[in-house]
Length: 244
Length: 279
Image 1 (tube, chains in turn red, yellow):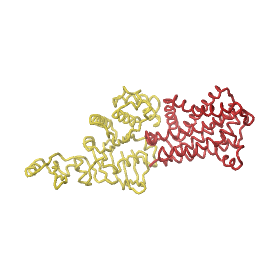
Image 2 (cartoon, chains in turn orange, yellow):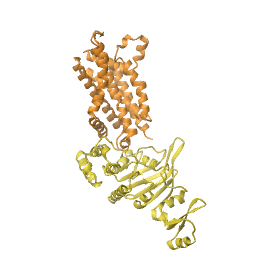
Image 3 (cartoon, chains in turn brown, orange):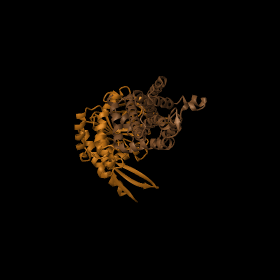
């Protein structure tokens, strides 16, 4: 447990050192989407009986919590391939589970911070939604899942370039197809079947329902928790693979 | 105390270690020498838990490195070859995180950091980000970090590589000081004079096998006391002599350019392997 806290506190310290840079970087993406899609179209277009801006913001929260949780992989890779600090963790008397838990918590923290940024932007844009416990549970499960995936992949890749490749192939397509910008049920049924395999589809649906004051589908929450746990276990087993 | 028994390590097609056996006594300053790719760093990585052995056993103060890995890791401090400090963090923060990783209580961490920064003479830079330090300062911070949890065994993998001679000698003094406090020191280097100056015993590693182990004096005296280097048919040739008189008698008959010098550890290595100890 103490090892996990050491790993987590180190990540927080790094985050604190570049807090404003991080905050700015977390804000740019959602701000651009809000301006381009939300403010540009959101005034007149209605989706599922609500202004598009209201539909978009929960989607952006799902997408940004995913990308920021997954971004912990970049931090791990910088520590591993560039600064070689990963060796310091490997030489310390801490268990792999402590290392993975510390990094996953750091990923979740980054994700939550990015969500707060979007909520502030949304508030400034005049949009206030329902942020109850279901909303936060959905956000945390989404972050947990993608932070676990990030830690596992960060242990398996052989270079920082490999990590960028994974982001391009998996995270970027998921950002656009996981129900963030449009309702999945408007797609042809065969596309819907495929999109239902994406965790982000379930995360976006749960976050959106909660934000609209409705209880999310328990199946979606269970699925996120289940996949997250499988990925966490895989991340745990991947740590030894990072050793020579 | 370090005990290594039949340690092997294979990387795909390369056998990096071929059954290494070694015993380093408690409190000893031991140098592990060899050319690049001979297996020095691989040995240290295995002993400190950064790599798995393919076969064989090793014990640090009695703890098996894989079966009792957490206990074994608590016994040792590591100064790796490449600087692996958190450059964004300050000197203090780097040491503090290390203390947390080794489960040191808050008060103990604080006092130990101040003590060590005095010890390596860098306390005035305590609040500086590591990225602002010179190479020599970073090395000293790494030594301080490795000593944070008071390890009984300190692994130094090329601790002075890339440093200028004055800083290198400062690090040597520090290493001597650490040993005088009772730590076992396992040092790899390809600076022969570093091993000669510091080590009580030396092992030569060549292509994954140990080819000689003894005190520097014993290893050198097996060859002689003086060495004459000369060029014969375009090739450097070295002849060894028991004493200065014998060497002088030989020199009297020499023609062309030659140099007479004391035998050093590099001569021992070349005699044992036919290779130069070079990066």
